[in-house]
Image (cartoon, rainbow, N blue to C red; front, side, top):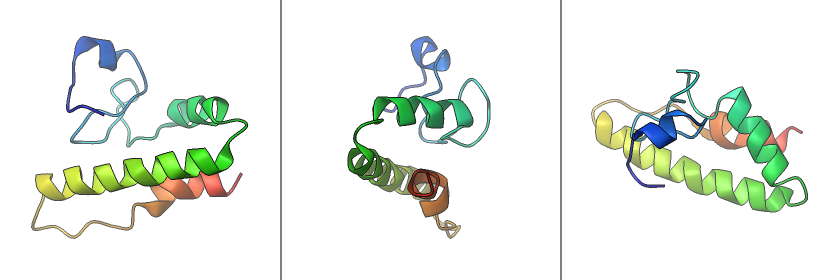
Length: 87
């Protein structure tokens, strides 16, 4: 995902980087709408969804660490991957 925060991205529930917030909901990404979209896209491929989410989590960790290098990140696994494992 590119580091863009253009108008086209603001109309979707895709993460704004480097903050990793939803531009529509204003909450931490993935928001409920993004989770539903991802579950639909990967309906027949749960391993693919988990792999995608793990990759996205790594990108978020890199971005968020760069934003606040002096602050230890919390474990992002529940936010990015945990919700998809529980279904």
